[in-house]
Amino acid sequence: MPIAANYAALTPHFENAEEAMGRLIARATASDLVEVRMSTEVRSVEGGLGDWSITVEGPDGSAVIDCGAVILATGFQHFDPGGETQMYGYYEYPDVIALQDLEAMLKTENVVRPSNGETPTRLCFVQCVGSRDRQIGNEYCSKVCCGVASKEAIEVRKLLPDCEVFIFYIDMRMYGYWENDIYWPAQEQHRVQYIKGIVTEVLAKGDRLLVRGEDTTMGRPMEVPMDIVVLSVGMEPSAGTRTLAQLFGVQQNKFGFIDSVKAPMDTVTTSVQGVFVCGAALGPADLEDCASSGAASAVKAITSLRLRTVAG
Ligand SMILES: Cc1cc2nc3c(=O)[nH]c(=O)nc-3n(C[C@H](O)[C@H](O)[C@H](O)COP(=O)(O)OP(=O)(O)OC[C@H]3O[C@@H](n4cnc5c(N)ncnc54)[C@H](O)[C@@H]3O)c2cc1C
Ligand code: SF4
Image 1 (cartoon, protein in one colour):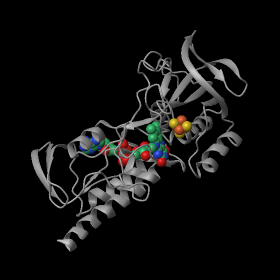
Image 2 (spheres, rainbow, N blue to C red):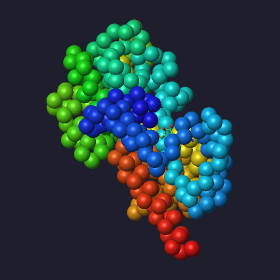
Image 3 (cartoon, rainbow, N blue to C red):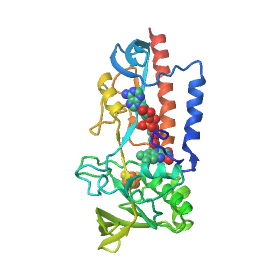
Image 4 (cartoon, rainbow, N blue to C red):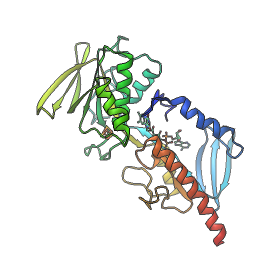
């Protein structure tokens, strides 16, 4: 996702996303122990622990892959903020964008109002779009969006020092050390303005946007003009996560993410023997979580095969 979705710099250390991910891709593709099949889809699966037969379809036709264990790493997709329950005008107003849209602009160091190409003087983030929302059934917190929005806010302030940047939040949920890495520097060094409030809708007013809601600290309605509104969209299971979960018959939670049935001490074992899961297919996660569960799932997969050999 970080490359496909044009993430610019990674939270929390501002490392170039393409370079960081590129190193991992280069190691995998250069290894004799790894076979990478691009643009290839799993069509059907048979078997179980120790003898899976997986039929795949790719550019060279279909093939059957025999393997002992499987790790599902099919990740997430961004919440669609333009659904009918969402009153932000994402598909209506060009200057209403999502986190990943701003990432793409930051990557080219060209943050402008999509409607007219002008440099914004007021930009805000709206937190928890598609997360922590009982109405739509996504009650979970997506974990990364407070940190990612704060990181992007810093980048906008550095790139456009004359642009005021606001973050409207319900609660700020910084993740571990991200508090010191991102949150305090955003306020103290970069003058990002955090406003505790609930945004109910975004409207057009003249050639600007009007953000309407309630300032919950002051306990009064608010209406603030903006040039760009950035929606901090949450994470949902990807289509691939849903499809492969069904093909392998692994248990999913009510949101569609794959369940780790031995959590919390074992976060990667699914309900089907010989099938493991890692990364954001498990639920909202940052890259550190994904690297940890990726390594854990590899170890679990190998161990399951070794134990089977010893027992057999
Ligand atoms: C806007 C935004 C910004 C973020 N920025 C950061 C950040 O700066 N730092 C950070 O730590 N975290 C960040 N995150 C979180 C981070 O993106 C995720 O933790 C991470 O990408 C999850 O990795 P993953 O490999 O599990 O899943 P993904 O990145 O979703 O990758 C899954 C891969 O599986 C492939 N796939 C899916 N289905 C199939 C299928 N059926 N067959 C074959 N392949 C398939 C997909 O094409 C994709 O390549 C951000 C999240 C968002 C929403
Ligand atoms: S990380 Fe922040 S923006 Fe994202 S769902 Fe949690 S509280 Fe909301």
